[in-house]
Length: 431
Ligand code: EPU
Image 1 (cartoon, rainbow, N blue to C red):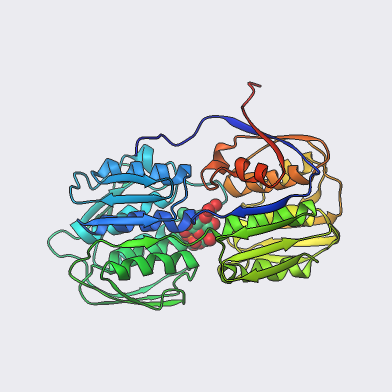
Image 2 (cartoon, rainbow, N blue to C red):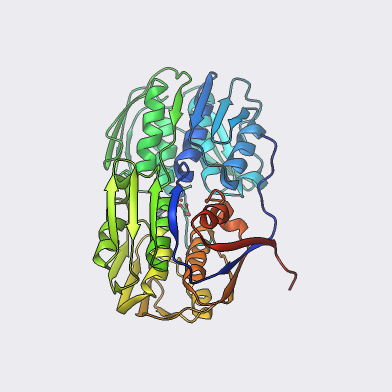
């Protein structure tokens, strides 16, 4: 893949107040595609990934893999071939690793296959403390020596290899669980990952690894058992639908008083959001791979908590908070996963929202008529939330620094336009 991540400064200019109607096709999940791309490093054979989203984070992960010597070929807009037969480096450049957080997954995969890996701490959104102890402690328990060389962490199991072990996670970290799964499936003997994260993206990764010949049981629960195997082969694997993108469009229907059919979604991954949407008065119909979301604009206030899966996803916390600016009464939104994920509130207040933040809780009084304003996307989900606010607002809004949103949403402006929204992408004006 040749394209650079789209880190150019662009804005979306949105004329609000139009009820969105029609259908939208959800792309593959960013947070499942990234670990599955890392899994391809575990074998010298071809891996084929389908339903891969065409987003900046996938591009930058491709660059990380290419920097190691892997071939990454886009066979179509949504499918990739990855071949890691000729790995030439076990240490990706820090500037590529810094572009996102999934890049740190190369650590577990390289260590498992080659017995050594070095990687600087990963980048990612500014949403609070984002330690990596769970990753490092787990790799150590598998027999790697962890040290620090300049800015990079080094994991060394040369000559000894990894051996299966009890891996207790202090916190059910999503990427931490994925890194340890990648490492444990080529370790000698059995590993038990206790207090594992159980997000659907972990099940997607485990399914791919099992297709490659790994022996993993219990993914999707808090206890995962991995019986190490000597080697893995290639596989073809389909990335699950992006539950956060599906949730964002569900909220777009609700906040504009419209009706949207959301295709290529998995309602089973969205129970917590669907429950909360119904509680606030939104109509949601579900079938196997589709959601129909409709609202007449009359919403009730709510209390919600963003917690690990299967609770309401922290990645939907900001979009839900924006929806609740349109609900009658006082709503409480508690962020329980990250300690600084309410920064978008100051932007939302510029649009007239009545919101106060007490650190990790937003207290929202509604309904408020939001008004168009210039606001900045501060991270991928906060940016999506402000786009939702702009769709509901009276007048014109400009959401700038849209590259944050492009990291995780495939052509959000194009998809919104197809639903009737008035959205234009413009070069960011110099201010
Ligand atoms: N944590 C620890 N110790 C660790 C690691 C994490 O205490 O060693 C804590 C963090 O401080 C945080 C909590 O665990 O409070 C959650 O962090 P986690 O490690 O689970 O997050 P992550 O794996 O770095 C992934 C997603 C995020 C998503 C979170 C939570 C990817 C690439 N990123 O991050 O997605 O918010 O899980 O579900 O999978 C996004 O897509 O916008 C995004 C930020």
